[in-house]
Image (cartoon, rainbow, N blue to C red; front, side, top):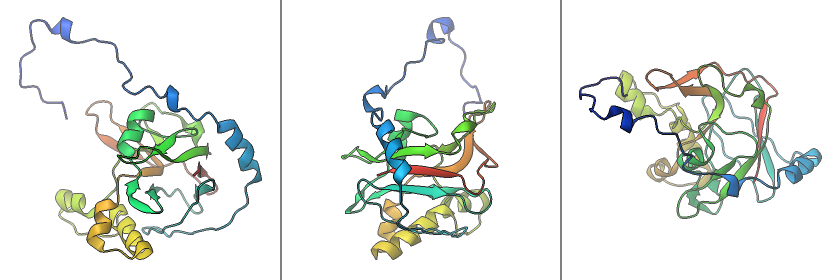
Length: 227
């Protein structure tokens, strides 16, 4: 946090500050140009499968190329952590950091979820968001962030000296072990930073620390993707 100042201000301070921001990764060349087609297609969706995930748990599901999937709130204002993998290559997985650099801190309709190096291709495109009305509030908060990593037992131990293994990282790891029948230590290395679905987050205006608020999600709200 840049709240403690130990060095002296330089004599040429005015020449060093005040530059205009320049977007590092203009995303006009990767805009979803087929969004109108996807919106037409989603009017004819037929549900093939449903997976219910209990609180403080995780499950896996498979989505094939050309299919849609939704994450829906079915009870209370719950939030979820989403990992995405290439079905046939677990080394290709969602790259939240690069997706954040391309689209910003929070995702919504038309944004793509890019995969890790050396692949860097879209694993899914968000096609509908029933919470897009929320936008950004006065504190800079919004929903569906790619800034939080995921709650994990190691940070919990660091900050509170508590051992708790029903956090997001542990839940995701156990689900991957069960689905792919791989070793726990391998699964833990490829479980990755997430899309925080429905979660309302941002950075504080003063210390720029990561914060969260009660989510505006209610039963029936959903975030929809095209694979």
